[in-house]
Length: 124
Image 1: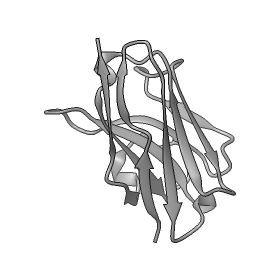
Image 2 (image 1 turned 60 degrees about the vertical axis):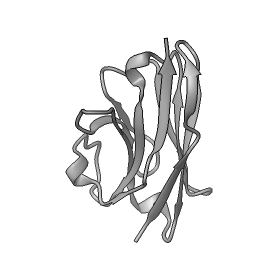
Image 3 (image 1 turned 60 degrees about the horizontal axis):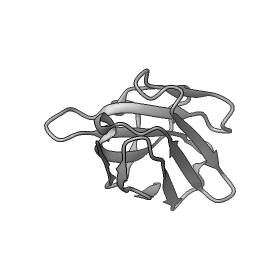
Image 4 (image 1 turned 180 degrees about the vertical axis):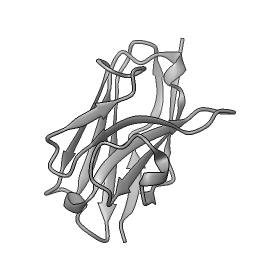
């Protein structure tokens, strides 16, 4: 079983940047695809980005493409989400997830382990 804990959220002005971290414990994340999802108040959880086991392939939601970058450091058992040029519509709770299923899935149901999330608030 993998436990993941997100950190790095906060309040930032539009156009600013944040870097989220997802620290895993219990097992090595090298066997898991890792993903980031987010959920804004009153909305369903939505896919943000995912990265394959060795970090060779990545996939992004259209809404964040070109602004967000997902990366992983398997030696540190950590995944990152660098968020640049943030917009008010990026405001949400951001969740890290780990999935045994290979590939670049954007479906939350295909991820097995989830953190409790970290709040990101972007002011206009």
